[in-house]
Amino acid sequence: MPTDHALRLLATDFPQAVASLGLSDHRIALIGYLDHHGIAFEHDGHTVIVKNSGETMLSATFDELNRLIEWEATLKPQSLVVEGSWYEGQLRQMMGW
Image (cartoon, rainbow, N blue to C red; front, side, top):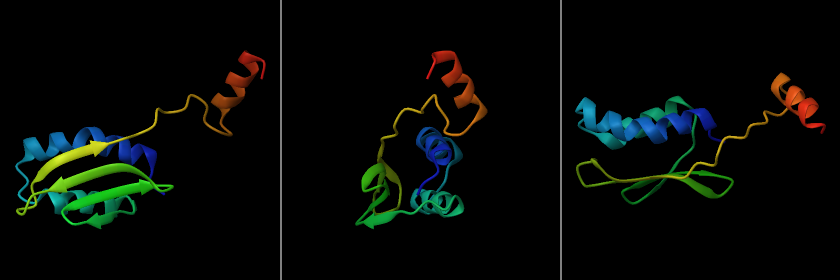
């Protein structure tokens, strides 16, 4: 299961990094990031796909030179309640839950 934090960073930072760092192989850079964070992915032709519970969270399509040509990231809003945390207990107490 992908880590939410790593995917949020990837969704916002990867396209910027590709544009500003002059990386020659965008596909290898993406796969390296996913491997480093233990995020499972699939290949569909020139597209790398990250799914969570069967739902596509990230899709990156590359041209024949492995340059990024299409980027789609669908992340759910972060929850205010973190299960089992001090914050959850305080929020429940304040809200009378």
